[in-house]
Length: 384
Image (tube, rainbow, N blue to C red):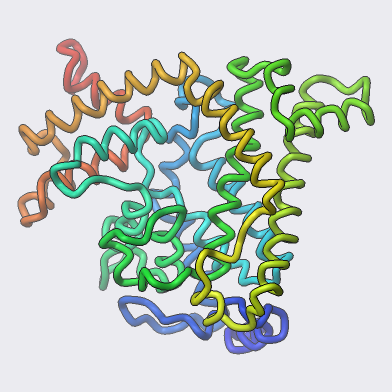
């Protein structure tokens, strides 16, 4: 059995010079003994997977609310797909796969029920109290809200994973970023998660949109990425069933984006003579990117999805319903915090801000739990 020190030595042999090494980590908030054979970022990844917040992602909306069907993506399946894309990119660029995967697995922990609509609603409700943003909430979960250890709160993740979480697809002028030096770019391992996330959800939203009949095959012909790959599959397999063609087309779109990202990022690394991790952190804008041509194609696809899927009347109806549910829950708990369970209200008694405790409680809800809680509070015939 290899020891942790031997695994760390292998990293020096196998990883690129600008990749993050476990032995170079800035460590954890609370000092812990190192594991005899598991590396630091591997332990972070495992702690995230075993967290309560990670399991709750199974019943949180990606685009479709959980009760609409068993085969649509949820926050959990999206996270797993994004992590898989992340590992592929990290391996191709000789980056630290464990660090990249840990950031990918944690990137959506702070999402509310009812998808991005839920985040917008909670941010509006929390505007007098500092607002709400899911990346900051993800960091709050791993730093404070998860309670699994006797000597510290949170999961006590490494500095680099926490930095990757809070700097994920967001601006750096927020208070939560101050600890992580807003003037510096994150590691390449964290940077690739931003794009893996987008590549994953663009692909699976096409798939789910077609399965739900909210998107049509004919309408998608206006999207260059879809049209080119769809025709290539049809020419190669003219008798294939529609569901096979759909899957293979989405697969090709994802592969083309990932391949382009790897090639373009390698070109950027060479063009800017990036040799070390310090070079990565000093370079702004970020080094990871798609080519200009591919970015234009992806932007076209995103505009199509925004207009035809995310603003589809069925999705909009659920967003309005989510607003009614989350606003009702928030206002009720704010008016009488004792309606929250003891584990939440005890934090109010301990002196924590009521609004933040309420936001933590609502953000942690699954879609199903939020719907049930709303019925218990507002339906006089529902048992409380």
